[in-house]
Image (cartoon, rainbow, N blue to C red):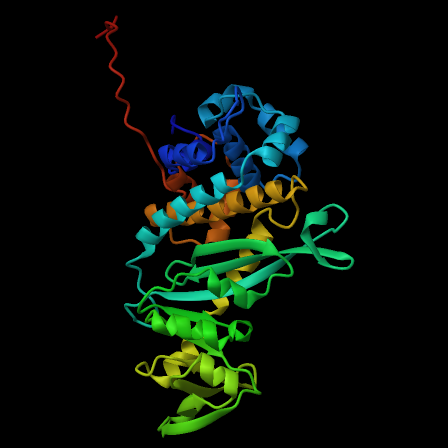
Length: 388
């Protein structure tokens, strides 16, 4: 029988506490805090995400139901919903944003050598955003339209392991293309984007940085064909062209040549036109790359369905951003544990199993695989035996 840590404690042990303390010091999160530290706050919100708790009262009731276990779970203060609400309201959300970036760095190192279906050495990113609707009367700072509130979650997803490498939370009015100003392009990497990111001046900056982009073209842009390359039309390809922009402002913004690839998607019965600054990869690979962009859509769908980012424990901007960043931390940590334990199950299945067993004293590997696990008993008994 396993006599070690609870499931929750085993998960927390994968977190670098010293890095968290650095983030707290950076933003003075412990200033005038006598009890209920930032780490206690993080653990409360971590538990809420893991166990799908619905409210602050729900979190308080669940944790107070096991007072004899709280210390071993890592808590050093009593749990109160009012204290947790004040912490979410006042403690800088950037503490948890920076810590999430630390965890993301750990995950990327683990998934760096994973095989990708397209067999390329370059890093491939998918960029997109997702809108989270909010009630305007409860979240007046998140004005989107006249009677509607919303925030946007902009995410750059590394397709090796589906790890979010860049995340920015903005108001609903923030246009997607402006997020390109926040990115620092990596040389020789591919960035897969939708039509919302078509801005030739910003794309030319990526080209100058030796980064490659692939995105859908709009139907109304003016260009001149320079050269047509042969394609195998049985694969769905229609053309592979080298082009130059002809309209005045686009030609000034992007003075160099581009590659235009047309592809017929039989599954959805539609024509797709792609633009890229890479002239070496096969034309069919360009279409396949864009298909992989849907992984970022699946990422948004996953976290919205399985983590608490659509209903919030607080209404202030600080509380909302704190909750979202801790939710991202949970997602990435689950991916880290899954990789380190070499588990052959989906993230969804893994999270569902963990959500109902946070207080169980079972080894995670045994819990997931159903195998018998037995710890070595190193206890040395000096008691003399009465009978031989």
